[in-house]
Amino acid sequence: MTEKIALTIEEAAQYTGIGRNTLRQLIRWNSIPALHIGRKTLIRTDALNEFLILNQNTDLRDRGAIHPVPRSVS
Image 1 (cartoon, helix red, strand yellow):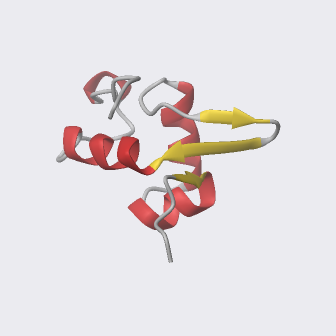
Image 2 (cartoon, rainbow, N blue to C red):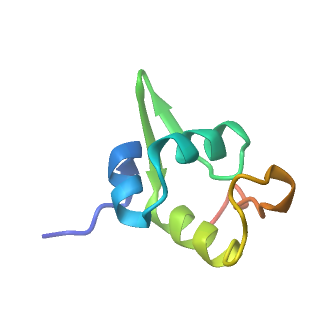
């Protein structure tokens, strides 16, 4: 089985342990780049991994403390 290069919000929440609503908020804040296709939102796994590395020990509810992922991750 091949690893997915992008995940839905639900899959990203399971993958990272971050709640769905928090992920949606992070996308609205432009902290995590996402692709919107109709009602579906996809997040690249490399962007999620980079976000987790950049924001270790960061309170994700504090917008000012979050380090956004650059738009061109790879």
